[in-house]
Structures are given as C-alpha cells and as structure tokens.
Image 1 (cartoon, helix red, strand yellow):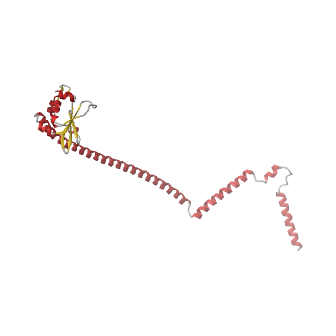
Image 2 (tube, helix red, strand yellow; image 1 turned 60 degrees about the vertical axis):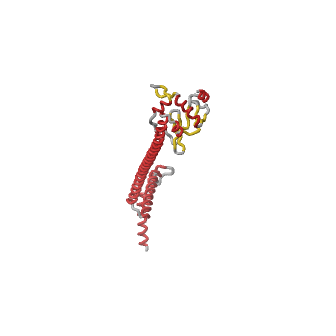
Image 3 (tube, rainbow, N blue to C red; image 1 turned 45 degrees about the horizontal axis):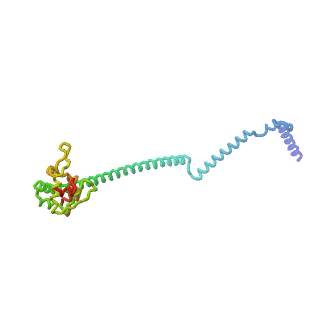
Amino acid sequence: MQLALRTARTFWLKRTVKWSAVRPAPAPAGDPLLVSRFLPTRELINNIISLHRTTSAKTRATATLRQLHIPPNVSNHSSTMKLYLLYFLIISLGYSCSNGRKNDTNNSKNVEDSALKVTSSSTIEIKSLSDTLGNSFQKFWLTFREAVIENDTLEIAELTRFPFETRGEMDSDPIVKYDRTNFFKVFKAYLGQEIYWNEDEGFISSLEEIKRRTFIDSANVHENWTRVGHLEFEKIDGNWKLVFAYLQIRDEDLWKR
C-alpha cells in the first residue's frame, strides 16, 4: 500500500515539473501584448464565422435538394427547358400575329374585290338602263323630228301633252299654259327664234337645230325627263311627250304677231 502511494506521488511530481517547464511564466498584470498572444485575433474570429456560414449554407442547400430528390444537374436542365419553352411561346405568338395580318389582308382584298364587282355590276346596270332609256327616247325623237320637218301638225299634237307650258328665259318669268287650239301659234314662234349652235356658225333657228339633231346622247336622258335645246320632254304612262318650251318673247308680244 505504501509502495503504491509512493509510486503515484513520484509520477505526479514528474508531471508537475514537466508542465512547469513548458508553461510560460504568468505575465505581469496590465501587459496586453503577452495576453493577446494566447487570445484569438478579430480577423481569425471573422474567418471562422464566414467559414461557418458558408458551410451551413452549402449544407442547407444540399439538404434542400436531397429533400426534393432533385440532383443539381437536373435543376440546371429544368431551367434550360423553361428558357426553351419561353422561346417557343414567343415564336408561336409572332407566327399567329403574322397569320392574323395575312388573313386581314386577304379579307380586305376580298372585300375590295366584292365592292369592285358590285360597282362594276352597278355601272353595267346603269349603263344598260341608260342605253334602254336612250334607245326609247331616240325612237321618239326621230318620230318627233320628222313630224316637225314635215310640218305635220296632227302628229306633233299627238306627241305633245296639253296644256302645253312655256316660260321666258328668266326663272322669274311666269309660266304660261296653252291648250291644243293655241299651241301651233306658240310652237311656230318657238321654231323661229334663234339658238346658239357653235363658235363657227353662231346662232341658228330652233327649226334648223331640230333638223341637225339626228342623235340624242343617252347620257342626257333621265328616267322620266330630258331636255333638247330649249324643249323639255317627259315620259308619261310609258310614252314620251313634249311638255315645255323656253320662249325668248313675252306672251303679249307673241299675240301681236
């Protein structure tokens, strides 16, 4: 028992001497330089904190990916697929807009073509109607012209509506009406009055004008009315009639002749 205690005491003394030889002597109080040798510096502390944060962040990120069961390469592949999908949507939208504009252009062209066809058809119909009216009045005019040249009073009367109306050259002049009995005196006065023909010949008589007019332009013939020189004609119950004349002399002067 004593041998054991003596051996333990010897071992403890040896360790104490060894520790005393290695450990530096205590620094005098108030010496910061010696104290700082055994304390960690601020830079070392900051590096330790930064290393800890970086390691923790990597650990958390890795743990998150593990929890989602998505390897890092799969995550990058997913981002690439999203980018390709965005490009595809943009291209599809541009193509749709292009087709829309093309369709609008085609629709506009179709509308214009339809409008052109309608206009052409309307023009043809109007021209056809004008030609029909012109032909109708042309036949009447040839008959009327021949009756005037031949001084066929009965035929002229058949081609005239009564009461026959006249008026002076001014719009303010009153309209005067004549029945069949007084018509020929008025019509004879009309045939004798002068009318302007052209620059070379100047004025000619109304009778000479009727003789020279063998053709009436259908463009000047309306549906129910037309004018030749100073004479007006109307279509009444499907038949053309002489209805009006502009006289250059007043009514009272006419009856003095």
